[in-house]
Image 1 (cartoon, one colour):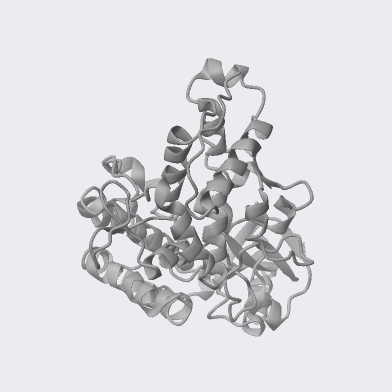
Image 2 (cartoon, rainbow, N blue to C red):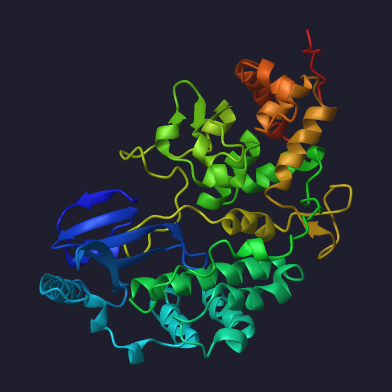
Length: 422
């Protein structure tokens, strides 16, 4: 159960609070802020619920979206629910059956209230509604939103699940959002029909294509161009390259994870792909890519622009990729820079990890396990994992110092380091 913040609300808190959980207003009224963010807007959904005893049983009833129902109206509705319950009635009868919208009407209401005008760009907002118009409305658009079952959701997703996997996953997320809104608005009492729908769908094929990677010998020149580019996105990209970290780990980093004096970035298990805490050595070159810390230790190291509701989201992955696209860092099949305009493919942010791995194989002689630990790769062999009692931090610091020296050296000759196996 989400944590409860016991603090009487006001209109400003309702609009701006970004803390996930239940925010208690009194009289059984709660503002619920979701853990997840919408894929188009980056905003957390928020809705009203009333909790009380109805005919001898504890019940939790949705009152509607906080985007559509202001605080004053939510209090009045909660007060009416409480009155009906005390008189022995069922508050859910306050909503007439004829008021329940079709799935299409519900989806358009969610889009108007939560997506349109809130998306990061107009194209995302159009795609949010357009995907439902193309794939969901023809199948379930005219159905009452309280009547749609899991079989009908399967009929929406099955035709595109393996043919257009990324589109299908986004449609699934948007379906889930609409049905979650319907429940909290009191239009639906059955569970969300999108939950566990994957069990009835074919297994999607794994994409085996590689991320476009830059040849490591080209990196110093590209890094100089990145350094000359202003903006938080360029700083975050430089930090990502010099730490060989994943983009998501960098974008979610907070100041409480960074120890500037010790030169250590401690990433908690919950933010790591392998689910284990990970320490990253921060070299002098990496520390130069950091802005001065702020007073709030929970603040993001590389924040995006503040939103209208006062929240500060992390940078999107596209922000870092846009730096490489803006600089037109295009590479040929062998990773070398393409000199002809428009030729080759733009290097990817994740591909920079491959650039680091190739450098580690070809330019220096550190043991395999040190290279894998630097990339925070999971240990595949159970026996090896059982006996590996260290994260090889000191050895990794040596290697990352060498990586930073190469990347920032401006194309100096490669120096094969002494064998480090002993």
